[in-house]
Image 1 (cartoon, protein in one colour):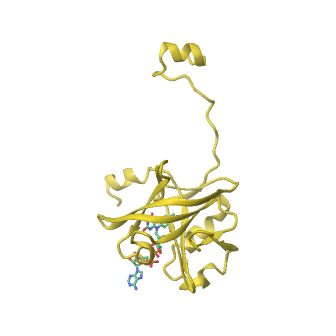
Image 2 (tube, rainbow, N blue to C red):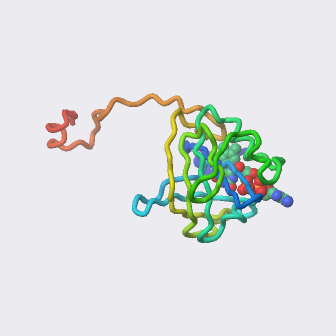
Image 3 (cartoon, helix red, strand yellow):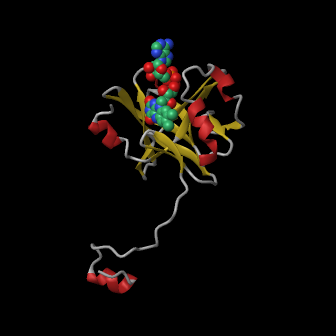
Length: 184
Ligand SMILES: Cc1cc2nc3c(=O)[nH]c(=O)nc-3n(C[C@H](O)[C@H](O)[C@H](O)COP(=O)(O)OP(=O)(O)OC[C@H]3O[C@@H](n4cnc5c(N)ncnc54)[C@H](O)[C@@H]3O)c2cc1C
């Protein structure tokens, strides 16, 4: 049985990305759900990778460059493929997708991704049984589609329903209520 504390953490819904690396014939991809935005200026993201991960071995030091492919709901099979320890090594891993090299990092950027980024590692620190990488986003291009989400140990298509803008909430001040029409 999953301990309550871990079960609680699994209630954090998160996007799913495939991190990619390429240096000549050396190439690798890995599925992660731990990518998160950290800073706007400079533009930084963070990602956590297992201490024994091959991907962390390739990019786990400052200055290393890699790509981030934020997966769309239509790309769910890629999440499983790049998490499968039996996937082939090297560029062969990418035979099942169309991709182009990122202009900055050279890493494979996968067609149809919801967003594609090229990053440079700024710091790598051990955090428990993972490395916490902080990287600067140097190149980026948003795509179209709905996100693939990881929630409670399962993948979900992010069929998002927007909430009405500026719903009434208990924290609106009198002034805000007047200027925005939000009732207190
Ligand atoms: C939706 C989803 C989200 C995920 N999110 C994350 C995440 O945020 N962070 C994360 O780290 N992982 C995450 N994973 C798991 C990750 O995708 C897989 O573990 C993937 O294989 C990692 O690739 P890698 O190159 O980092 O490690 P790999 O080299 O593929 O190794 C994966 C694991 O296999 C074991 N292993 C590899 N080679 C050997 C060997 N020779 N001998 C013994 N053991 C070995 C190691 O324990 C290693 O950690 C996620 C998976 C899914 C499906």
